[in-house]
Length: 254
Ligand code: PGA
Image 1 (cartoon, rainbow, N blue to C red):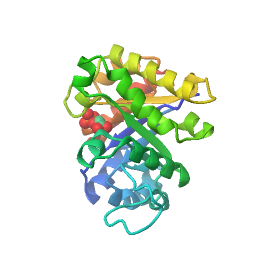
Image 2 (cartoon, helix red, strand yellow; image 1 turned 180 degrees about the horizontal axis):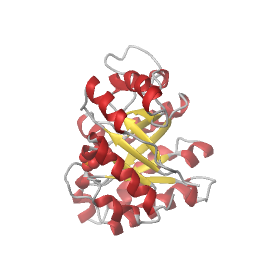
Image 3 (cartoon, rainbow, N blue to C red; image 1 turned 45 degrees about the horizontal axis):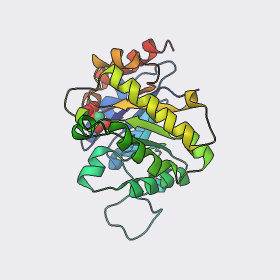
Image 4 (tube, rainbow, N blue to C red; image 1 turned 90 degrees about the vertical axis):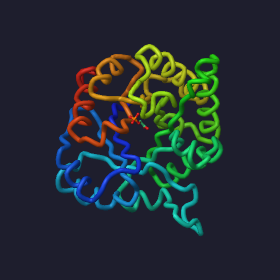
């Protein structure tokens, strides 16, 4: 069975006070895994607070370095994220590709580092508007995906979570249409099952991200190939994040 997940990517937002107030708003949602990606420096604090108020909430890092330790000033490893209580890692987010120049090869190494540390990676893929207009969206996503799956073993490929995040939908207030998402998610499932010995594409978990809100969520989650969402801006508000989680539960009849 695929997993049903709603994850909050805070990006570089938050404070100690916000970690506390946000976690206090979060309630369990039947059948839905709730995940928070705060800035890495807040993971330890978040872990302490959720152990008292929301032990069902999982934590993760928005990025890790691929090495376990070393002379890499300003970086944090997957092992350190695990040590702080994190269970997930985002790899290949657009903002890492764009502002930190992360290549597909580097992202593949980060996904492997996450598995090495016992963490669950969420790989972000997605095309630009120019690539979509040129009819290259599926080819771009296929390249981003296979660059990572080529370096994974069978069990890792089966458990890899993919988030389809079209570049033109991130932070723009304009999410992709349910049809566009369904088409690309089916393409992603096809690539993943062809890449491995798996062939059980219903077991894969594929999320959508890009301007998901409590209003767009209902339509997006109707798609049978959508297992949840990676939410940025709207997820800074814990109450709105909860509404998106409830929307997923209703849509999937959990
Ligand atoms: P957004 O961000 O929801 O603000 O569009 C999504 C993301 O960057 O993962």
